[in-house]
Length: 223
Image 1 (cartoon, one colour):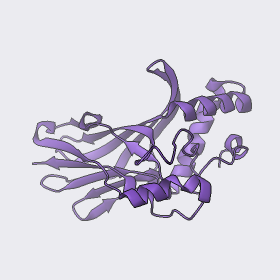
Image 2 (cartoon, rainbow, N blue to C red; image 1 turned 135 degrees about the vertical axis):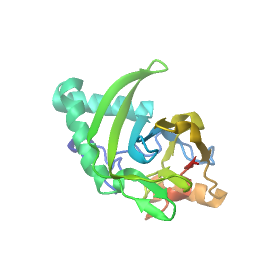
Image 3 (tube, one colour; image 1 turned 180 degrees about the horizontal axis):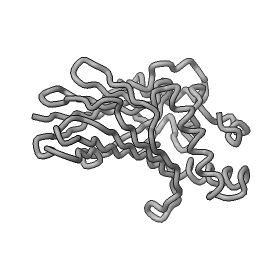
Image 4 (cartoon, rainbow, N blue to C red; image 1 turned 45 degrees about the vertical axis):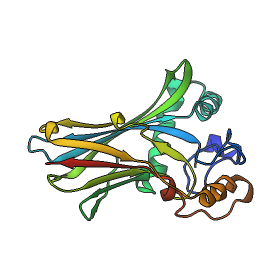
């Protein structure tokens, strides 16, 4: 766990840092707080096979501001602290398959450790946000022609919204992309499940498996 965040006791038991529902009122929200904006690129090789997955996570402004302040306190500067934080994030996420589930047909494709990753601070709508970038080179190019491809990104143990927002944030790049389409399906948790999830910052009940109920699904089809 990140040393600088252990002092707050505001993170998940899974080992990944989040400030739990800091701006969510249980009485006013029926769905998860939108905590991370996602962008995913699926990179095809010259034969139209899936060879690489690139992810970008833009964190909530409140988490970003508090984390940046802690980084400066811990390491003296953003320049010194952000690369070290990135390495800790990747190490922690590796225990949970990087919160990512890629399925091709009836097979699950396991992502290897990202060959390249970074954590940067940028401005978004005038506010400072943290952006995590990860590039996964698959161990072998995967034939996806005429096979259903689904993609989900979620914390398996908690209630955190991680969304692409629109299908425009799902990109297919490389050879033969004109033969591919993408779409998004939003999660449809019951009101009872949403209310239960919103209560967890108070009750601290076990939440293993809860995150998948709030995960959107991206679909890729190549012909």
